[in-house]
Image (cartoon, rainbow, N blue to C red; front, side):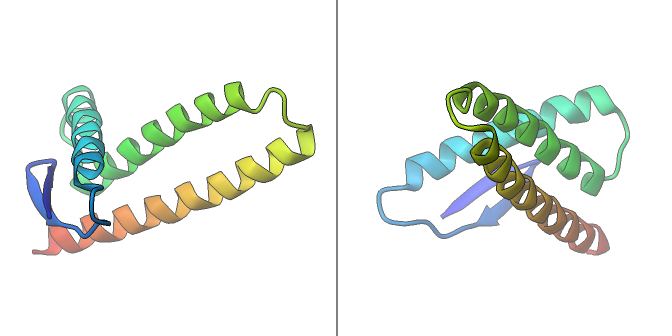
Length: 104
């Protein structure tokens, strides 16, 4: 299926029945990207994508912290470490994608 983020179309695959979820996620990311682009002014697309990724990660961390209040400190630290690694990988992928898009 195709989603639009930052004015660009992306062809993505998803499991059957997950199309609405993917569309909603793409709209959310597009909304965050648009908001950051307005506030950040003239920035390279790769920078805006990384800022968007970090903004979403920050929101996720906040929600996770509220939800892990009952989890032991060690478990929470392990979960945050796994999440931080995933966010870092996502940021690297977005940066790489943005670099390739800018080359075109």
